[in-house]
Length: 484
Image (cartoon, rainbow, N blue to C red; front, side):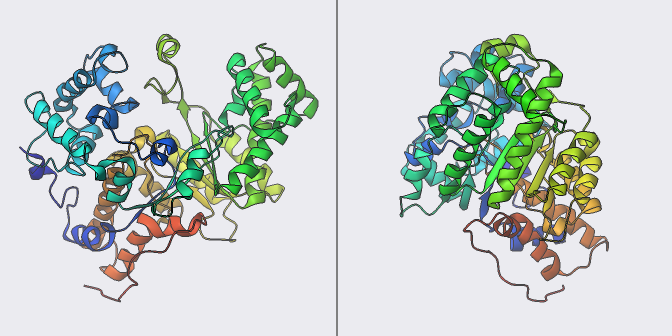
């Protein structure tokens, strides 16, 4: 079997109406990727990738996890093996990936942009695919900026630490010949890094230097973060993000916060209770800043990080040793949101839940804080990380449909460091169209292509363009009233 056989133009589209929705309403919509981990420095310099491993395998912990499960030694994942050796080990793994979403993503990314449609990746085809893709990567249009143009990306948000000078973002913004907007996202997670006092100390000193504020206690920490928040706003940022195991919403007193700060800064460990108090304060004050500037805020909730201590000590974070947590969601999430609501400081909010067992819990809580001030102010976010596969995407869409307004959903994102991962938007769009088209053909939705198609267009792009307040045009033709 070749990719063309199972990755046909109607891949994942199992119904006539699904095919029409995708090809007429979804396929050509531009991409607004409002959450990614792309490197702005690589975009600024218009980096050219040396080979397929550099663009495809480096920093991709999804692939590393699969390779380890296939018995591939760490030497070929994150070790010192050559790029070609690492690629060959990935090629050996791919045929074993049947029913894993990586099998779909891998061959979709080989199709677009590399044009590999006549063979599957495996040990027998690896050398030829390596040469074919590397030849493409040598072309000017396969640079970082070229790939963004290829995928029809109009705007991408990176994920940035408050201490970042945003020099790369300035360089991109000043280039009038490059049409893609690249905006920063404010992610102050390291202000809550109390479980690692030495790393917290180093980061606080860096924050002091970046902000011009001598950070010596909790109050000056917040002052420094606020200055950096202002700085990010001046550079086009309209979005914050937190990657948290759970929401924090404990009561606290400033005297306790100052004591906790001093103890951690001086490399002393603090209790779990004290960490929760401090994190509650930082999370709340960050949310207040977002409201005051009219930003949107994102919370990625439910990841239990770095559970393999041995490998964390060898490789560090973001290397594929994270899992889904079963931590209590409801109590802290409601307390966190309710505190902001009572103060009149609740900004537009997206919550990405990683534990599918509590999808309905999260969606029902968010519905409690819709205030009618704007459409879908509170968003049950896209299927995230372990869930951004067909099953997880469908479960997220079903939950959102049952507890909110699917038609107002801001849609998919990549959440990726790879410049090839924009195919995930295509994957999502095909799944969305198949869901809606199937229900049209079964009589569960009206067979009104103008109505359902306009919803598809909005979810694919327009809702995000409206929601975040970016300078992004609305796309797609107006509804024509066609019904059959």
